[in-house]
Amino acid sequence: MPRSIESETFAADDVCHSNFQSSALKMEAVGARRIFQRSIVKRGLKYAHYYGNGDSKGFISVKDTYGKDSVTKYECIGHVQKRVGARLRKLKSKNKNLSGKGKLTDSFIDQLQKYYGIAVRSNVVNLSGLQQSVIAALFH
Image (tube, rainbow, N blue to C red):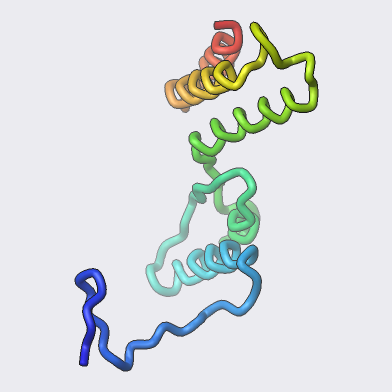
């Protein structure tokens, strides 16, 4: 007898089968490679862009799928913004003379993160404008 889970109906013989037998760390890279490789055969297309975070092993596995450096990587602005805050907090923890009143506080780091994200989003195609906006955010 079929059963219903969140408005989807499954027959009794529907079984989930594993299609990956390795560590979870390798799963993203293998999955991305499979998707990119089958794109020509199944869809007749080539992916030109890969959107991912900075430490993505998925991009390394697909960048040469259709020839040397045939896929371009794009960073998610939110991930870059998050890394800025994380690195500033790490810098503050290593250099104790950077913390304290009037210096690199957590609320100031949050503000810098926010202004950095605004600067990047408003200057996506303008590198010199991006540089000026980021520097302005530092001295704001």
